[in-house]
Length: 188
Image (cartoon, rainbow, N blue to C red; front, side, top):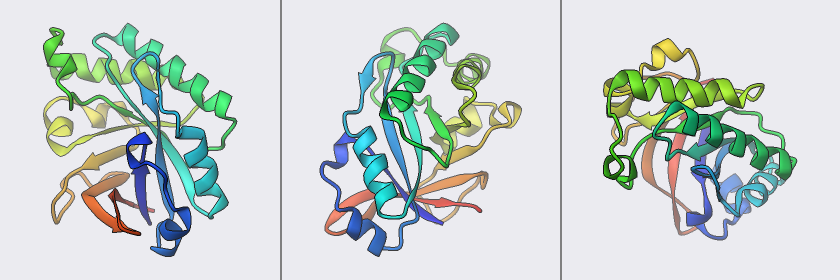
């Protein structure tokens, strides 16, 4: 199945174009950190559903400790509950450090610490189904994803997926209706 992931950074999305491009699912950002709401979450899920797509979600983390991850999970659960939406796919925890926040704040970049932070989020978001999202290098170097035993979404923008777990983000340049999206393959 082919899909896209979306957030406020995608602006207004023409979901007819998305459906007509053969897209089957959307992973919509709930927010980030302990209190950053993605204002487009509920609208994106509802619009995707109204065009026949199934949905999941992702939450970008600023957690420096397992306790921070628990707080983020509770915030993420509240966003989903208040939106009143059904998610057919998991909620993915994005633990990377794309903007350097963790590095600037003395984060302990060890496999043990990162895996424990992921586990805290996963355990705290139950009963929602949860997985982890990361680049292939993060999955290989920092997250013991096999120990976690949850769906894995590998971001590897190349011609192959080295992890081949649950889902693969293969590009950040999928063109739909003149707009670029991150493109994903769901193995089902």
